[in-house]
Image 1 (cartoon, one colour):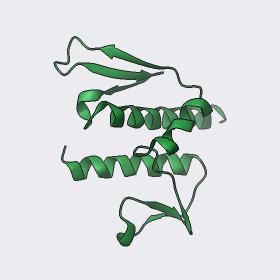
Image 2 (image 1 turned 120 degrees about the vertical axis):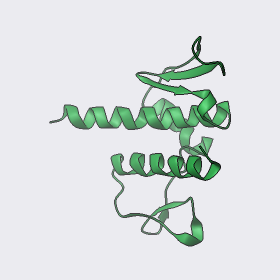
Image 3 (image 1 turned 90 degrees about the horizontal axis):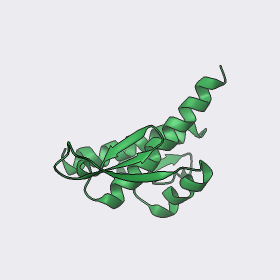
Length: 117
């Protein structure tokens, strides 16, 4: 995956999480590429900023574990509930962890949404 594709995938995850958390009318303006806005409010960059991502761990009481992978020559994966993120698919472990936390938050919110029906 190219750097641009990775960057776009992070923004897509952030948009999805924002929608699940009740944000509507989300836009990304050309002048501020990579920043999502709702009206005049800039939304958190959960996959790219620990100040935005860190509180999700406590909010959803995530238990995070790291596992060595015998089938992956690059090493480890991050587990949060049913979410598994291979570190080798990300630029570094730090970014992989933030991405995993956002994916887990999305899974948690989607599960809660479906359980209400």
